[in-house]
Length: 390
Image (cartoon, rainbow, N blue to C red; front, top):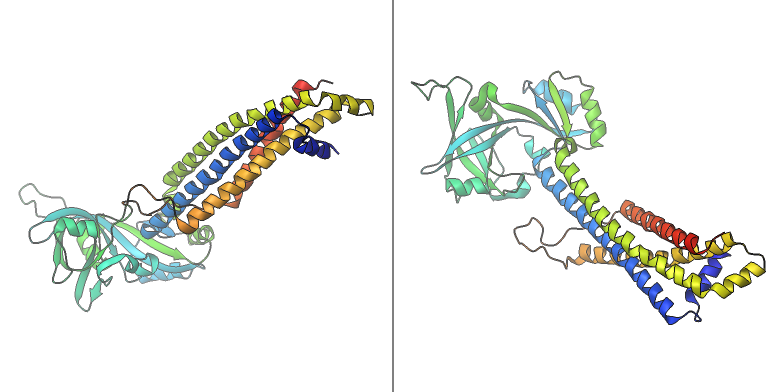
């Protein structure tokens, strides 16, 4: 019954035009920040998805790091774990790379033949191939920024020599003592990105020769099951002296910062919504003043103050609800159009994506809906309680 009275008051033609205009302004003032919330949260979701894709090019689903032997028996134990689809030994270290007339420092990943099954190297090759060995010949794959520093413009007959401090102490009289080196053909150039640059990929056995005991050893794992469940199964293998991390754990700080930024933007938009919702108080108060005669009539036929107060609380909920629903619809339409057509472009072509990425999530829509309903109920309750006493 209260909802019927509230709806009648809202659409009644007998209401003064000024009150109708104020109600319309209140409706729009709620719709705009709600639409902004939908769009902004979707954009942050989109950027988070892009970042996760970029990290997927560099980091495996699960990474085991520590001091272990790169033996086939250990690899067989890991591959026997349910949900592990591929595993690759990786050795990392720093080297000095030299071509005929240039040199540069870079990081090196020594990998085995399973590495391409864990990370998508072949998809990012711009020149040459992703083969690291061909018969007796060993090859290096370098990122495009390294190729530019070393003056490598083609993989045909290009070679690079790598120097590393293997582990022995460098003597003052013989500084070359303890330095190991190797010469490799450059077999491919891979596209560099924020996550993969200044790097060379070489065969595992060559890296073992270069770094000796100073290498950083890792096992990169690709999962065919839920990553967290696979992590628990790997922990159950009870491998001593190793750390087992998922991609999310390894980059936890960065993901946490992104979440903080998302919620900071949400609360700024929420503050705008709260301020805009104050106009509902004015609409409800003016409607209460206009409907004094109807209130007297309702009191005379047995209605009490609580009933009348409930009518105007619902009046505010209707105004806010209609405005919020319009905002949700507009926000969803804008996000879907951006997702399909990408009409809002990034201001700089150097970005990874050409247009603003978006990702519409149901949880965000539910949270926004609950938020504006809660605000509407609060401000409507304040207006009705203030004007209609017991």
